[in-house]
Length: 332
Image (cartoon, rainbow, N blue to C red; front, side, top):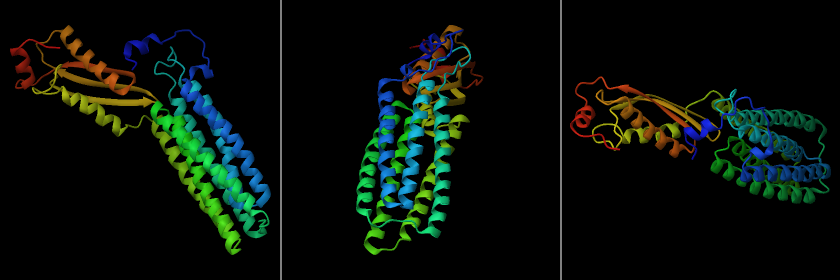
């Protein structure tokens, strides 16, 4: 975990801004590099399959691979920026670079879906599909599907473990690419078995609609992060902690109540602030001690970032906590 004091030590006033891959934890750097290498390899495989089959569905899959490679490169840059320590100009760190990367990736996927639809409309008139070497195309796309599924699952798992929006977005993208490869296999399989070439452009349209849906989800999540939308899972975890310290039956350090709870996160960094009510008879140092202990507990719960509690005197004359704490010494 990284409590407030540690975060403050990272403030580097007057230090020039540098974005370098050495800022990235090794596990995230390896995952990002695997995504780039796999993306380049699959790009070659899929365009080879398109050159063999001239299939609209394969073209849509190959076009998405271009987006995969570009997205993975942008993801590597975003990770380098996001892991840059906080400085005087960016006291909350650079974590939002990950949300920007996810939004940009969503935009590129959406553009790819539009290009696929345009290409499919053209093919419906020309009927450009070679049926002579469909078996080879099926083999190549099947190989690409397996690699995409494996790498995508790895990125998604790493992103969730590291709380990286960038790696999660890249993982979702590669898994969606694996799904589109399945659709391509189905489309080409129908053409091979039945001879109905119309199945190919229909499959391409379905792929375009699917990846367009994935793109809108990525863009929505990106904007939610950039606009500091409240994470309901984080909210529940925070209220659970504060509730355990609230009231006469709460665990030490006890507080009378709390309000104005706000929280947001930039990638893996969490920022929380809230107000707590304590008995009026407590000294400033006692109120500060209670606030510091609860802040520390929240920081340990969330991982990296900080929590800030504002202490207020309890105005309730009949407060059970005030009565119990005035009748007995304050305990840690």
